[in-house]
Image 1 (cartoon, rainbow, N blue to C red):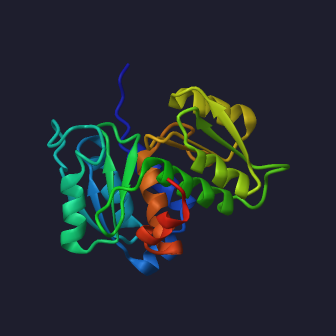
Image 2: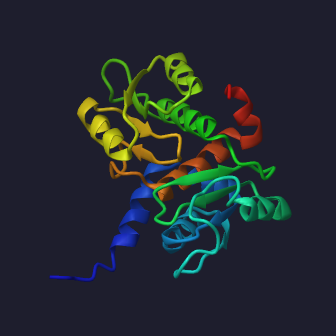
Length: 225
């Protein structure tokens, strides 16, 4: 039978707030532009506002798409322009079902997807200092570039490579007790999350990265493209 679960969104929001550095985000109160363009309109702006962000939500209609569903540079021109117009700290663009999140820095530039993944990997390794015996493990796919492997090895972690597809990443994350898994397309799986790609949590994590480490335009220069 079908039942209504009106608590699911709040439960997911509560989980995310426990995972990220809510205190630092609340202190910094960053200005974030969210290009929802689909399912992300229901939750991402709400979660970020609850964390203390000042949120501008564009393409927030709940029926149909205003732009192409693929969150790529071509389809995120509106997001990039709005970030520049408002002098926002960063922008987040989702695909239709919000399992992916693509990041725009404060200059309105879309982060290269391998660089975005490398930034998140390094951040997650730094956040998981305790509770893991032996080498920390990171999962990615055969599509990931050399910069991903370099950041994993530089951090003293181990990279596990799977075929393309978030199902493979999620299964390997659980099998190997990895701390994080991600694909260059912007689908990220967090060990302390739901073990499926979660664009809402990814958005909150990149806000955390900005608040802890500063402007993304400067941070991206650390990584080879």
